[in-house]
Image 1 (tube, one colour):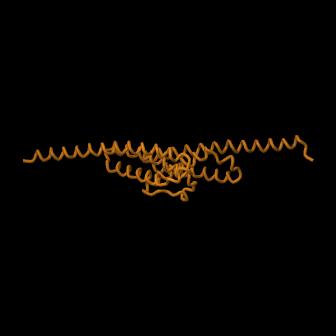
Image 2 (cartoon, one colour):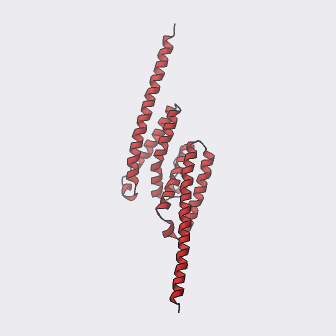
Image 3 (cartoon, helix red, strand yellow):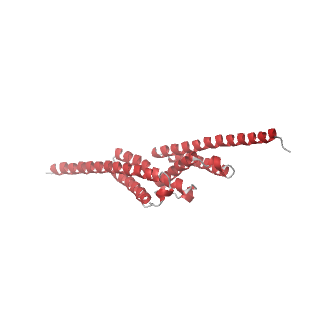
Length: 211
């Protein structure tokens, strides 16, 4: 017969172990999120090798957390883990689009569909930054291509009407994306018109100098 003291001692030991697992998991989740964010920044700077290295590191952490979840599911599966998965999904989708002009799939990056969709929605914001960078460089065509990608992602997400009830937060992200795209379209249109006018004036100036 077990004494109450021994029973509670075992419970205390179990709780301590769970707390240690919880602290480790939380630290890992924050690390994975940070690595994914840094990878996106490197991608914007054109440092693709560094970006891929950070993504691989984030992927390793996420796989480790997936393994841990088989034993401590309630501890690992939390809002913080979902945030890490979404940031990782956003980064991997963004990098593949930049390098290969292709969309990474949920199976390919091994994230749940919900986190993939929410990460995909956030890619629109990263493409706005790409568009603005292109406009600053005077590359209107690149800016127009970026805007086209933003439109494609948005339209496909909007076509998933039934997903709004199944993917918490998707409607809000789409509302934000709509405003981002409208602002970006305005920026691209304005620069395209300015560029066209500039070219027209140059042609006029050139023709006026002809004998």
